[in-house]
Image (cartoon, rainbow, N blue to C red; front, side):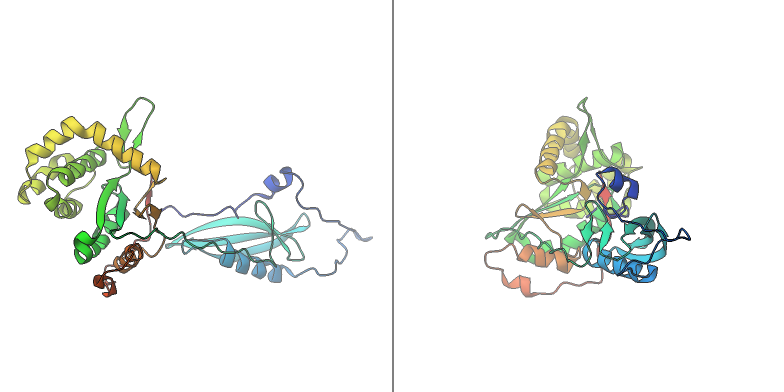
Length: 316
């Protein structure tokens, strides 16, 4: 996936937990000075904080996010832990609460820190003789454009051994109007790219690459035609397609994104299963090659990693 910093359900205000049914009670005993009496097994604030952070990093955070301890203090018989969560160069603070014995961490529902959560294995695509590969993007999402560039070496390597298609993430309001995250020109460009794929498919990937290089969501409606002409694409045919077929083509895209529950650009679907591995040329190649009944010899070739990886996304 496409991204905004994703902070998981660990960031829960303690009031919600308490209102939700009195999940945790702590018996407090006060001495003559009004201070909490010593309780067997109580951890120091630093010990409890370190234990909570270690558990959160190992079991709760995903997508390369990491948590570190910013502050911890006792509050209402619990430890209030202020976290700093970092992901893709961005930071955000959050708050969780832990019991003073370090055994309960307040998420929803609470979990026992001494028990690890079993990790679910990523769903593997079914194997076929010719894997079906769908890359879902928005025409001017920078992360989607990066994914387009990264998957091209895979296409050039495997050629017609796979069925690779590019699809576009759009929305439709209750009045039947289609839209795209980055505006009408992005929506229009998505339609034009679908039309090129339909009528001059041999020019498609070159067209997409040149549009990404030369045009933007602010000038695509005037920029695209010269790009098309430079590539030998029949611009009038694409204009006619956009005029006459836009609604039906976008409706098909909407059905596909709904079928695979896609909302983020880029999303790669292999044989009907969303790919969750490294978003690089080599990562994409491995994911697709895992979808073969018998992987071809080309799958043994290693693709360059110099183009990097996709580290974010655009969410509709």
